[in-house]
Image (cartoon, rainbow, N blue to C red; front, side, top):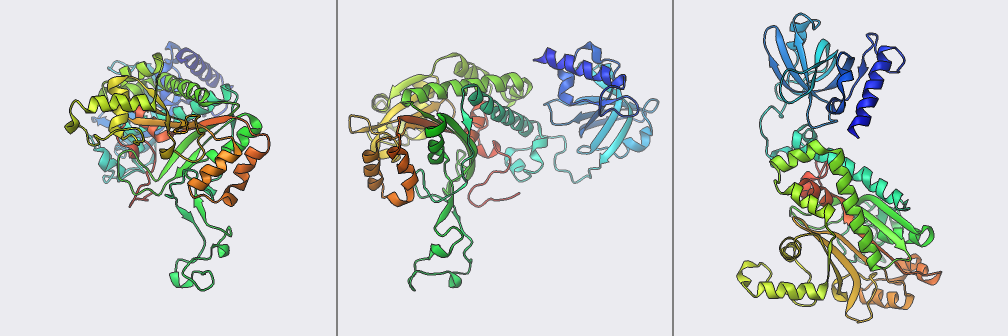
Length: 501
């Protein structure tokens, strides 16, 4: 809470002046983060502080200058006032300071006479920590997101990308907080695997075999590569999911979750796909599909509420410059229960709507067995239900082998959470816990039982109903911030043809 932070800041400053706090310089000044100015009370006025950060703007005259300094802790910077009378070596230091420079400012907090801030710092001393020359690409003007992707090492210094980074950080921290409160254990699953969780085959290979094709070991002189000579003695890949490994720990610890990078070698240049992304994957023992939907809804609402409370100024930027409807959409998400509809009914709703004017749809053919396209998902969530909606009980033919068959023989206990503006945000299911059924489904998918012997063991030794889901973290960031392109929701995006930075 703001008041708690303000009291903490005032206490630290009083202690520093009294010489009782660590990290205080010879003048009795203590470093203060810029964000703390936003929440501080009047006790801050008159305190001696140190502010360290990067210069956003400089407005200078011969005897008076205004420098906006931002340290990344908040959207707004703090205004530093420097003048020839009270700032040491004023002319010399101001002659070196420019946009992008790193500075350390020691001064006194005063009430601001200008608009937009309560307090400013009257500088007694400004140290140039790192100069910035005229080639700095982030001068004070509006830059396109496309341009900023070419300088991804600098783009978090901008208002937009800095705000996205802070909200992303808050969402990640609140993810851990939510699952801890719910009694889940955090499990770190392998990034290198021999298993294809999705069965799609779009995986990055990990190998130490020579890149020279003439030097590759072959099986009995054939054209088939002998992977027994490779580092792991078999083909290995970067994982597309930590789910299968998480299931093993759920069947021992009860409720677990993973949160880490995953990879997919899908040749896609859309705004919704990355080759490297992060997945949050909870798994729950003694749980069914409806337990999964309950948990997923509670999770999304919790992290969105917490991030909005922690990053209010950043959300103000999004609603003003990115998506004016964002506050209303997030209010709806937090305040209203999510809708739920069986896949078969969803298809009937879509078919009836498409029949009114098929020309408006890119994919007008919809029937039982159709893998819903983004336009179908968005119509359901944005137009028909006008809120997030769980679609559940999908046809078994379009879902993965590990999803539990329903008694009807046509569907599996699977669900997707569709949200306005994005489409699919979460995919989950009850896992197939019956050994004979799972083995049959693996055979149908062309999977080798020997590769999944450990996964099958879970069904041999104390098998229980269990369920889980996966949430693409970057898609959540996009949804919460209104970011249109997923490449702006991650620090250094990886996609076909691009592996910079």
